[in-house]
Length: 591
Image (cartoon, rainbow, N blue to C red; front, side, top):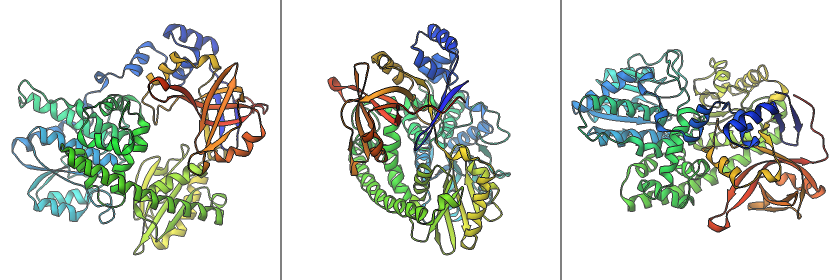
């Protein structure tokens, strides 16, 4: 498709222009506005059946869990353990995806009569995944079957040790496998296996866990274990939604189905006790819960305790039915989240100063920052903030006793996992996926890491890859923005990775009154813009750097996402600004 670009102070704007006649034909076929049709067209939604599935996302759209490699084996072994009254341990990770995976599996196994316990390692003392000491502790309690969730795919030695101690192990995971998967496991359920042929690959850990309980319910039903009342597992989609949104997997396919129905449960008055209290402390105690509420309100509070050490409070919040205990735990999580935010803020500011002082963003194509003082639990967030600010891959490490533990984050054009594969000869260990990874390295290798990480990024990217793209879905005029338009925007939810909010451009809007800057430290741009007699309330988050630009100009082209704001009779359409430019500046050609 031909189109236009513009380079602003922060982004490269990109608009790809589809054939007008095609959009007109599809609009007539779908009975939609042209601008909405253009958004759907650019998401590959061009058939009536695909459109219906996109808007309705029925639970019948979930595929058979048995299409995933080893799923039948996993269901057989778990069902047999339940029938033989063997003790089962659910072993998970300490982040939101891991905690929700453990809660989901623990709830369902308890519901179907299993003798079940759980284990989540302490992030600071034990680190990620299975470890020998934990396995020995679990074995001492009489456990006969370990079911991992959101971890275990590369734990070959630990699985073998568990088997030597007389336990069986079932791996359920979604992370990228290494060349060898644990051969001693009696089942390895991971859609990312090279020999897996299932149709959907992008599950979070809790998504894989949900597919496992789908299979287990089917197996136990075939065995006649439920009689006339088969457990309704739809009620667990609130947990699946928390983990799926927090893990930033694409909200397409089956993930979109999970999250659409899970948000409905989270929005209801009868959601589980822990989540009702978590909504209260997060300030989302009423009305519709969105992916933004989950990603920026609910999930960080569960994550906070895991980042600072022990995830037990977050898990107990998700499995308790006692309202008083839920209230206490939610308040504790809220306090610990505030502590985490303070630690995080200090380290982020220090990391930015290191980059600027040493001009690391000019010397290197990939950032590597480290300290012996930084808290291990927040370095992943710090890496994410570095990527957001400088739009380049970043690794952040903290060192203790000569060993560095690090977290990496990346940009769309650089596969971080493949990049670390090129460095594995100097790494003690690593794992993850395209956008996020963890690693360990000896302290004496840090200069090699900086040099070779730079080379790995530099050899695979061009200068254009380091400029963040702002993709515009459609150009619109003031008359396009009405209640019907907003109803269609809301029908496209849930938004997230793989299904981003639609982004529009309006040209030649004028300031209705002088711009102001609001919020903490005046970081957010507040404007009222006017065109063709329509005035729009606009907010631009973290756009303090635009102060000089908006003060010196009167007319702009603006890129934005429209939202409905306010409550009840006070609801109004607001434009959330992504970027803006002086109206008189020309677009930079055709792409």
